Length: 214
Image 1 (spheres, rainbow, N blue to C red):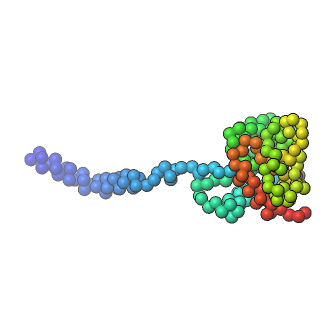
Image 2 (image 1 turned 60 degrees about the horizontal axis):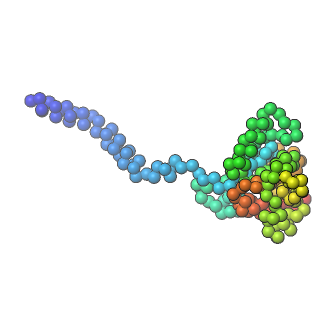
Image 3 (image 1 turned 180 degrees about the vertical axis):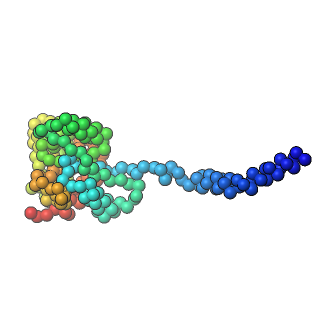
């Protein structure tokens, strides 16, 4: 008699909870079938440019880097991330209290090899060039590229005091198309420890396509 009562209770419990139990089991099976690591994996950062004191909005910068990645490089891999950060703001000439945190972040990005191309005003690039921080661009670019960019080379003093082509004047490129463009020269340099100088070289070629003759 007790056994019948017990089994009836089990049967009642099963009838009441079977939908929930089946749902849980189905959910577990589905999770096991899915490649969870691939779903939660962060994108792989391929290349990073940082525009200090940017005159571009974040949307404008995003449009430029997406055009470079997907149309110019034809890299349509959704797991590849190309960064064009416009959030860094600081001054070398008139340093304010908040500038030191931004400068520390900027230096940390260089040290971590996360910064492949720097876009900034001349005083900032002059400062970091004097610390021996940049690649000599006339050594990196091809003869054809040098010929096209020759008038735009910016010569800055290096760690030894000798001026070399450490920067490019990018003022007459798409980088001056921002709604906040203030008329100052827009310069670009490649950090000495960048591991993606070849991609930056391609970015320079991309900018050349957008270069006006003004």
